[in-house]
Image 1 (tube, rainbow, N blue to C red):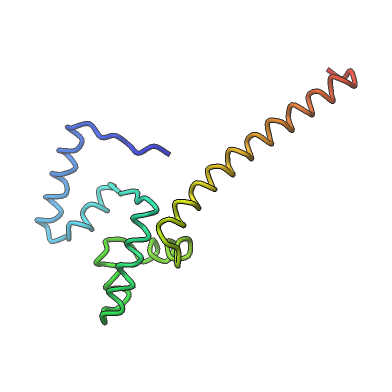
Image 2 (image 1 turned 30 degrees about the horizontal axis):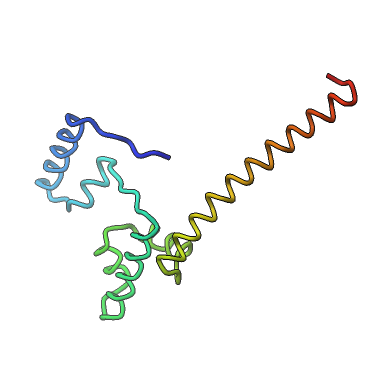
Length: 127
């Protein structure tokens, strides 16, 4: 899904909303979440963030604090860990390439199956 492109005036409005929320005592991350601006991370960035959490935890930080420091929610962290935990960056790239290829092949198979059914119907004279 393509990312939403904001117009310059929308960006200015969102920045003002963030300023207001921060002046009211919210953290910048909370303010950004409240106005509905989210970042989509690339798989390589996700693996890097998972490693950052591992390093912070090994240095004595709690998991919740480490997750807060990388700027994502606990739910996001555990979802990422389930999907990408233990993978290296090149393995993640390969996984994503295989998923794209698999989707392409599935579409091709479904198109061919539909063509086959149409030809079978035409051969029977049921058109």
